Amino acid sequence: MSALVVGFFGRWMGRKGSGIFATTSIAITFILSTYIFYEVGLCGVKSNIKVLTWFDSGTLMNSWGFLFDTVTVVMLIVVTSVSSLVHLYSLSYMSEDPHLIRFMSYLSLFTFFMLCLVTADNFAQMFLGWEGVGVASYLLINF
Image 1 (cartoon, rainbow, N blue to C red):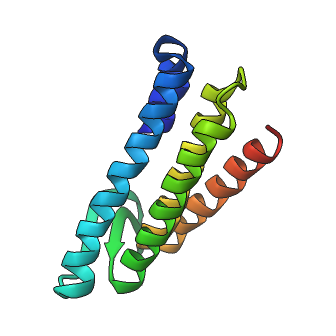
Image 2: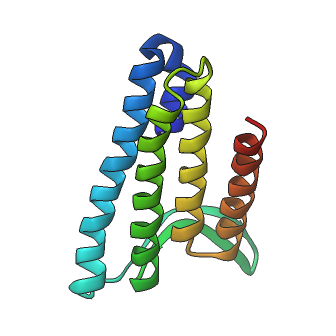
């Protein structure tokens, strides 16, 4: 969500506002990941959430959903904590860069696709997350 908001409304929010919004969004995601870690990792409540049927073709059916098991929630903690720290560091390191808004949008997009990759419940969705991470990495490297 923060990648879209910063990408489309970043000029309206300004460099500082868009950076703070992106960093706060990722920090909130880290807090929610910690809660999910408590529920799944410590209480043992595993969850497989089906959002919608992606495609249904005879015997081949694929749905869009999220899988939350022990490995997933540990990776959620790792991804969101590292991403929160990278966002926070980027705020001060790139504070004078005129393209901070675009960079924060790319960084948030990278985090989004990484979370899609980690929480995928099937290989097709995992592939989309993997390719999204590749595209976002390309955008960040070429920044």
